[in-house]
Image 1: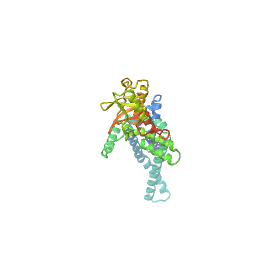
Image 2: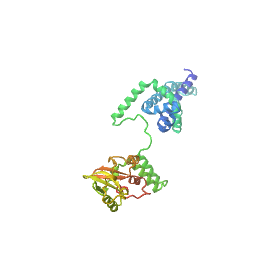
Image 3: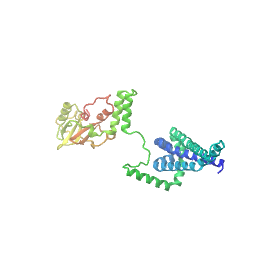
Image 4: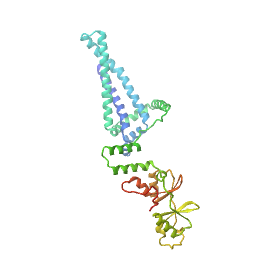
Length: 343
């Protein structure tokens, strides 16, 4: 093979290797929401998003391409460089075997340098620095490679997934996005330690994280029995219960089971001996396992300040104030969780 042919082939192989390396790191580093934001107006962004959704197949293609390029350099470039250096070393007076060893070592070093630095490190750095841009630029040609080699890539991917499952893990098909709660909590704690976040803000952020982690049953743990009156109670009974407890919303029981709730303001214009049937409203209920963020959303949608939670140990109540008290602990100082009853 002539020298110009070897040089052109080497350049093509290194460029191809750089392409596969850049695709791999760009897809891993690209933020999904940024690709989605451009997907409506850009075909390349849609293809990049599709590639990210088939991460393991794409990685199989990238690794297959990089491996093929490495083998090609070893088959084309290294022997040619070895062949060029050996006569030059002999011309300088080195013995034949010495010239051969020198030629082999120098050829290996040169090929390794070109592949490692030009074919891997440089494109990797570029892809990491501009992940969304590089993922979008390279999406269409990489998709073409995946279409052509798809049966082989699927076979390689399935073999790899089988090994992962045998090791006791479940393979993932897409890049995990965002930070989990533990990561965010650790970030908040670290920010407090280094002095970039004050105590009030950190308490509020921890409370916001609790909205995802805690359930209404956990929020009402240790709560005293809610204040209630029987269904046959009068307006005077409700006003007395509100005065004694300090709560504005009083639960209504029928045969020992909470069925409704009455606000004390609705009884103010009623005679003392008037029944409360007309001013009793159905009680809004939440499952004990409802996360706080979902409970807050449902209560606001239903315009209910108070919700009944049938938890272990009996019925409990939770209010919007109780939930917000977890987010703004420095701003509000609610009583024990769930004891407000809307007071």
